[in-house]
Image 1 (spheres, rainbow, N blue to C red):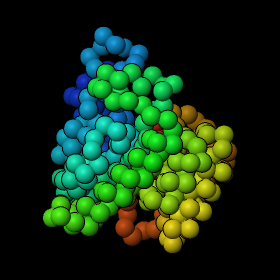
Image 2 (image 1 turned 180 degrees about the vertical axis):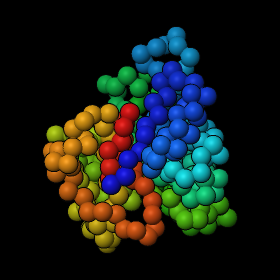
Image 3 (image 1 turned 90 degrees about the vertical axis):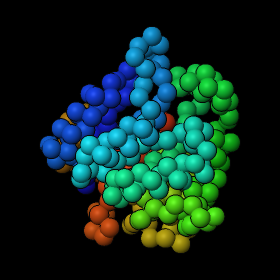
Image 4 (image 1 turned 180 degrees about the horizontal axis):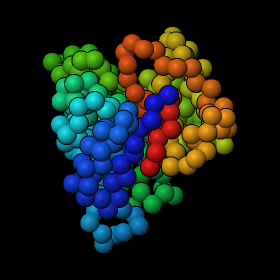
Length: 261
């Protein structure tokens, strides 16, 4: 199990996020994550929200060891073809420390729909947004293979799909390399099983699926016999390659450990 730190960007300043990242690495955290949002729904007149990918790229230069990832990128915010090149570039800048978290974005009932409307993006129904995640993963993998002369990441970063229901868990298992959700999700065990079953159905070893969970700084997650740990029942990740764990969908989790906020 690994423990990462989530840098919440809402009304944050980059200098503070950088200082927290450097301190987290020095303190022994395994990875750093941040959310992919464009505005703070609770502070419309505040300082705003630093853009996730720009922050991660800067932190790749400010740190040396920790893994880095978005928790998770809304595939509607960036064209998947451009994102493929962005990810390959960040993988090079970070010397292979990227975990690429992808998700469908919030639905119309979330406060994050307003930021999509502000940039002229429509928020489609759940199935349409989920299908876009599948399409994005397919295109990203094709371009990473060197198609049309695109930059190839070495190695390709794990794709962690975030979500809160069986549809996204299934997509994570079948098309991704990992699944991210909430540590205290009431159906956590069922969602992880669904992801693993789909991973097996795709012809891959379910024990290699990265499971990441998101939790606030709560004593329950660190207790040896916590229910969240029992529900996960996740075997330890393979030692080669040594990567961290990952991310979730419109506010998910992280690796096979407990992420903190």
